[in-house]
Image (cartoon, rainbow, N blue to C red):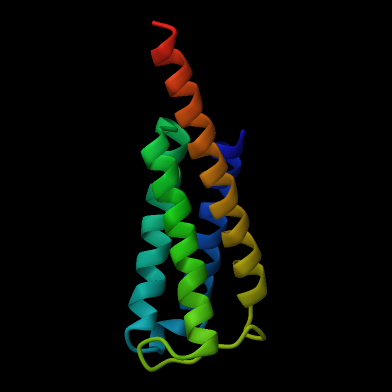
Length: 124
């Protein structure tokens, strides 16, 4: 269940980034292309997460979501590629919540999948 929810949240994060790209972020050097890349990779990764649900895939999804959170926080608190964002920007707080939840759920799913795999291997 956590893997499915995490996959859905990755898609939601991707949709937010794509929406922002269409509504102005595409004009920001470096950041614009990164928003498109985040959307494409996030959607592709969400499909792999939902289909495979392997520990390393789930951990990769968690790392991707955490990386997106980190990029937002760096851009808010410092600057990222010369761009400084704000948590008051459209969808910034929503994105932060969605991506934190995705990272947490996918990390949890990776841990559970690893434990299940260990249990199955030890019972053989």
